[in-house]
Length: 418
Image 1 (cartoon, rainbow, N blue to C red):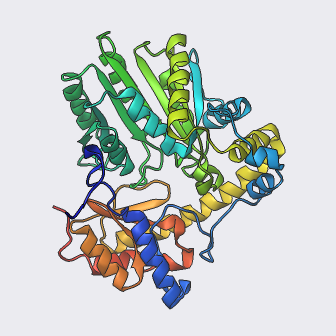
Image 2: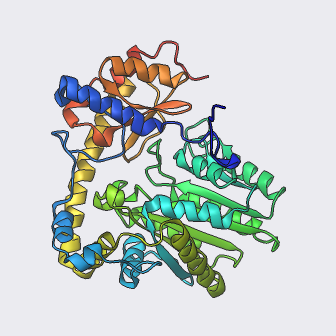
Image 3: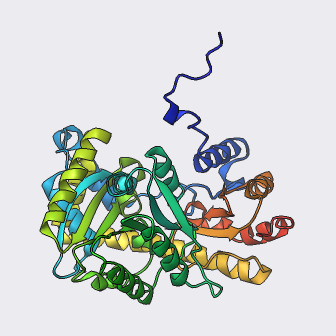
């Protein structure tokens, strides 16, 4: 007898290669063969400097390396260091926490850990949450892992504005079938589009959720994935929409998934937090309890070092100011790369998703794997998505940006989106 599987039935068939890290591996092989100056690695959402090297923020690195062994290596509490949760809250909201709201939260393994908790703890098995067509793929993979479903709405309307009408229609369809609705919004600097929702968008969305909440049998959950906010512009302007979350009905819960990966250039250290905003103290207490339990059952407890690092940063205004300056220099470098790509795309007639800021520029296409393969033959490595190819301009030295849009346009015949 030949045995071909030993998994439980729910796990059978999992494990296909991740397209991002597969493409990154191919880029690495090409760099080893041809030299990094002859290869464009636009695969992973990691900031690299203009020499193509990993970009760390020097003061962040200095703070981390100065931590004593017990702060680097000892256990952290399951819910996270109390001082870390306070520091994370301060950094996340930067003075813009909506008035009249309770907050609570837990430390998570990056922003993805918080998103995992929300999908598992706030969507019933077999039920559906709402995401736009342009989203981070692991939202769907987490749903599959935990036997949840998702529903898509077209993210952009015919004018390349956020599709409020489509979002509302899908939300109402879900609420007609179930009593809980969770909607995920990844903004500003959405992955993969680079689009940022406006304050007007958020005003209309929160008004819509308030209207839905008049049916007290319904539970409404807004999950804000803020992963790229620190590369989207002025920190106060990018958080100004939070004023629309004041005085929400008690049957609306807002959750915020905070990632330290991009903000502090510490991707592999898996620092993050999941926080809530609610007008119900009972809901806030419950939020901390259920997500602490999920910490214990998923990864036990998080990395202490990255938590203590943020505590020390936020405790010293001069240190934080210096890190803000270093991050701003990186943001401006990224903005310059984007400007070069977008200008060239416009000149050669290459259609891209509406971009304002962030790590990625995305080109809608069909047979995306085929188009990515053609680019790879020119030693240009990108991520093929279901309906587009994604350029991680964050990882591409500025000198390598010119010509990328032209190359994509030259190879585009036969890959026009439906």
